[in-house]
Amino acid sequence: MDFLQAIQPERVPAHVAIIMDGNGRWAQNRGLERAQGHIEGVKAVRRITEAACRVGVRYLTLYAFSTENWNRPQAEVNALMGLLVSCLHNEMPLFMKNGIRLRIIGDKNSFSPEVRQAMNDALRQTENNTRMDLVLALGYSARWELTEAFRQMARQVQEGKLQAEAVNADKIGEFLATSFMPDPDLLIRTGGESRVSNFLLWQIAYAEMYFSPVFWPDFTEEMFYESIVNYQNRERRFGKVPAKPAGV
Ligand code: FPP
Image 1 (tube, rainbow, N blue to C red):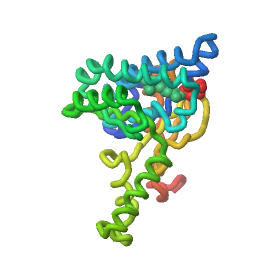
Image 2: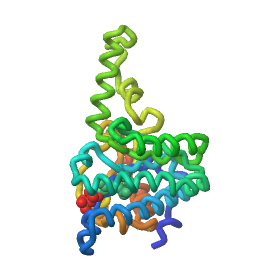
Image 3: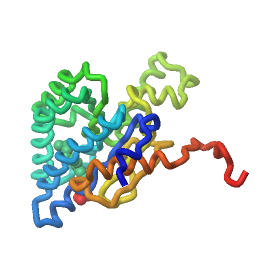
Image 4: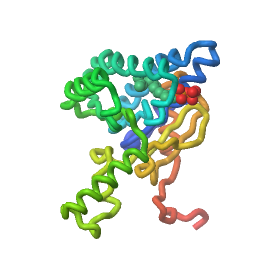
């Protein structure tokens, strides 16, 4: 089946979020260093970013480095940091050609000055692009994000800038790192695990989940299109009853 052809353009998810899992196992299965899996993972990032742009996804959020990833062996963390810096630099032509605005959610202060500099340069260079936002979750975890949001809200209540009664779901959303975009419509996880791993816990309340057994470096454009067709074949009810109850 040609999944690209099967996509209904008017029902493309506005926001797709991806947990890119399986780089390490991809490498280990080939007797390679885990870092090699991340290098291949960057190629998949390029492929899927272009594919998302092609079909009209407006926001693509990639879980690239979690708060917990700091606990990996130092050599792997260093390899990921090196890759991140070179990626932000080398992919600039791709971002500019496709009108991609880069965004970063996560604790930027946890990164070295060199990495922060590369992040800030890339953010600045792409800030006028409007076709798609590529949101990299870096130094990110949902509990970190929620903790920061609640702390900031508590501070504002304390200072009299926010009334406790004004706190509702929309207000909480304004304090999150993702306040500039809608919640994900579709959450994809590659690599065969069926868990959320501290990613966008608040925002995925009504996201459709799509789990692929394929390791991230092997995830192709066609597989991405397939996930969108699969999403389009589902009925999203947001807690309500079906539009047309079966058998009526
Ligand atoms: C999960 O695979 C992937 C990561 C922890 C990092 C994802 C990073 C990339 C795709 C490269 C682009 C991002 C940067 C930061 C340059 P895993 O290592 O957990 O795989 P495993 O579950 O098989 O061990």
